[in-house]
Length: 190
Image 1 (cartoon, rainbow, N blue to C red):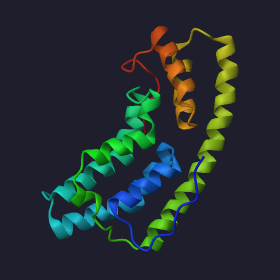
Image 2 (image 1 turned 180 degrees about the vertical axis):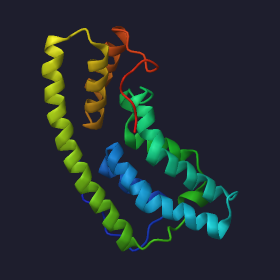
Image 3 (image 1 turned 180 degrees about the horizontal axis):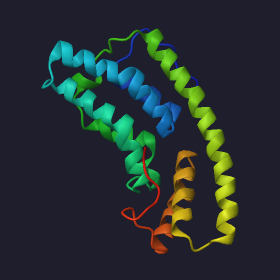
């Protein structure tokens, strides 16, 4: 599900995000990178550039996306179409930022960031294996409860994380047709 990452001496925001796109991280993997890399970079930017600097502001947006917004948007059904893939979402974020931000050189060493990315890949692999097991259980449960919109939505989330976007989109449509509503959903983001 992920590719081998290049070894880099330094990272810019753009090279970090391009590597993340290749990794196809789960929300848990994305959270790890946000916590271990982006949070530190945001703190350094606040310290060195100030809170109102555009780079600091974009790093704050990126951090919130990685730690909160991606998972929330996924759970709420805002990310449900094939064109909403994690890579496309990162591309959309990058398009809305300046070249100055994209080329901003991260303070942490390339070795440290590479280590975090490798650790995130390991966590990601374990999460994918767990989601594959969950998908089998949910599919079996759905055979008995075909009209349960909450189960269809849970299946959508799992299929999405597994990268099976067409099937996830179908499950979302099915959940909506059966009456799933994000305001009444029992599934919540952490």
